[in-house]
Length: 179
Ligand code: AMP
Image (cartoon, rainbow, N blue to C red; front, side):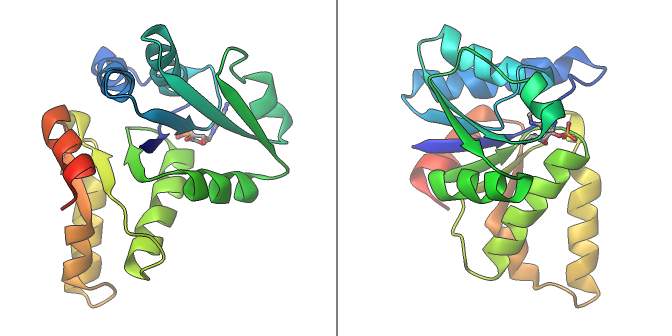
């Protein structure tokens, strides 16, 4: 499967986040999946990509024509796909991917995974979609989504389309066997 991983261009200030990135990268490589990601060689992005590559796995980086991002790109990937803009990159990553994982990250990660959640709601995507919940990082987002459902801005059943977990075995089963 092609697995999109969205995650921080920073490492975060607790080594537990890098460990989570390595865990996900290891699972991708050891199970013959391909990593689809934003192409950076920085932060958790670089850690996931390098873990997959070190274990002999395949990595596709989808890189927009944005100077700051180009300067931080990974030059050792299996495949690079150039896009003209951030939005074209997001679309390309979605088009290529069979499953979507968000590790902890910043506003870029939140933006990307919010779009996935939106597409799940309007039945444009089937997922699977995982919020990798290291150190309960995504609990505030889960609380916000539950509030949206409670206040009538989202259906409660939409919550069932997202797995919140930091257990790689549970994540693997969810992705490969479906919900
Ligand atoms: P953030 O979570 O704000 O650190 O942003 C990370 C997300 O935004 C990644 O999933 C990337 O797709 C994109 N992004 C932000 N900065 C970079 C970068 N330096 N190189 C590649 N992609 C980036």
